[in-house]
Amino acid sequence: MTYVREGLTRGSLPFQFAIEPTGKFLYVLHTSSDNITVFKIDNENGTLSFTDQYVAVGHPSQIIFLGF
Image 1: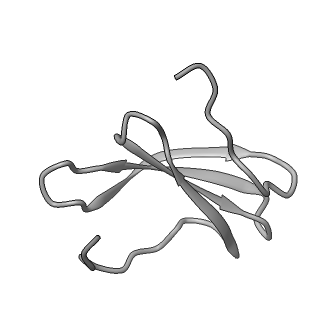
Image 2: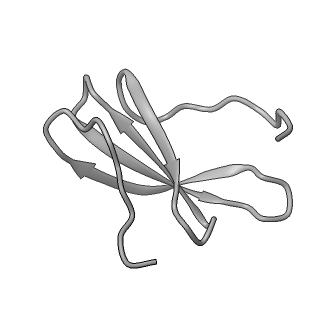
Image 3: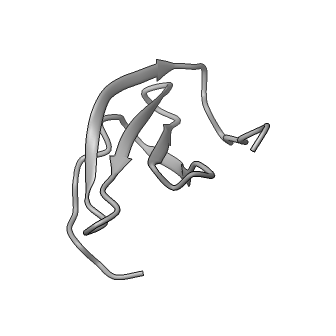
């Protein structure tokens, strides 16, 4: 892993992050803003692009990917 840059997580108090099994998306769980935000991972340089997708959930603490 190599440092590329810093960025906003689009939520408050990021608690956990997870890369889904295909390696195309990063999910960030925010405990204070009660949401999950989704970022696309660029395979060429590792940068993240916010997908404008928010999922409202109450106090997310863990994400598990099923069926892969």
